[in-house]
Length: 430
Image (tube, rainbow, N blue to C red; front, side):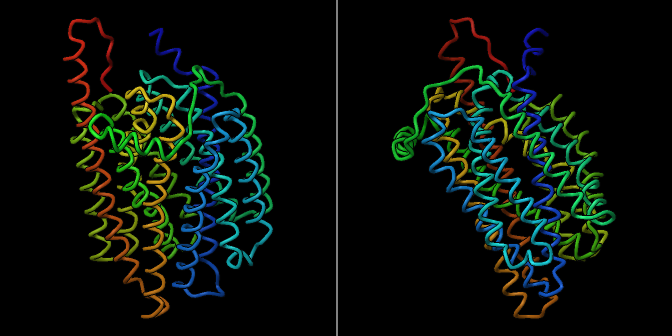
């Protein structure tokens, strides 16, 4: 019990607070900014989908590029400064969305670039602060609790922001988001790493090391593979859900309400995961998730209506937290398990490159679906459904790759125990 109480000190609480606060900004952009583009009466449905695809291509590409140059500063400068810079730039994005109003569709590339730049700075600092602050021993418990708080944020704010947009005005929304950004900056300065490693940042040399030591670094390679499939499915699913809900219900309040209700239900999933998940039980958690999500997508193919969309939204929102929690905990944990503490910056950069590649891939699919649907008719969704099917396959591979990762970690545990069988070892199975 004594060790457990040490998990959540001021730094750990601040990390969770930052995660929740940046989630509010993401809710604003990914739900309501996207819905505002979809509601642009000066463009066709297919044309608006093309704009959304372009937005995410530029955003994800810029985000991945940020990791290639922020690493040089991260090894010398306090990482919370990068989080703060990112928070300030994200504030600029929120104000731009507010100031541009009905002209927002014209400035989609500019907003995407600034958003990618701001979030790139924020996440590069945040991810490395997390890796240095939370010990490997407490990874699963910490990330599960962090995910629960993240889910609570997604219960409260989607419906709240949706009601504000539909019933009050965007000016009040801007004030709320400004307060969120200020809190994000304040909490970023409260994170103090428990163990600061001497860090390097040489992507070429790190790449050579991974190539020359494929057997020893297999779990890390699998982390990158899961990141690619995660990027090619999770983020695009969120956008596709927004498009489907807005086309069927046409209300920001409905969009926020569904997100809040289903996220509340997902908390039960998180408590179940936190209590019963072990690496050896991975299949029992992951396979039902990808099977049920895939079945709901097949239902949308058979009949695209409000009922099938709600069922898909519910199943995906409630179950997907399992896959997200596992991959979140493994991203930073595996680096330290392999005793590559000094290469956290390079590993996080590689993670973002693979994640970004998957995100750009799915965003290109979204853009192309808009282009091809526009050639059929302005209200066609044929290619949008095809894109949904491809993303579904990427999601299945996401789950399978996590199973591969957990098996690799089990094998590593067994080899570790055989090597040190004569020593007294404290080992936790997570």
